[in-house]
Length: 58
Image 1 (tube, rainbow, N blue to C red):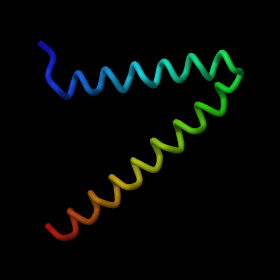
Image 2: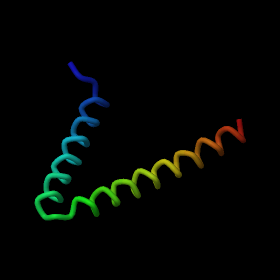
Image 3: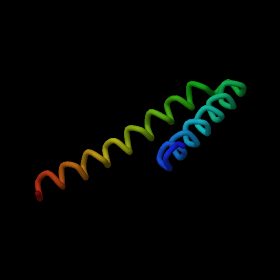
Image 4: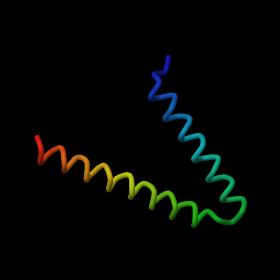
């Protein structure tokens, strides 16, 4: 039985794949990938800032 995290991760992956398929069909796959890279970068930057803050305070 998959854990809750695995179920959520699988659902997110399925959603991203469906979005990618839709973007591919509409000829906007390049924009989709750029948007995905930007979102991943923003989330990574926020995580890095939080990690740095915790490392400096701890």
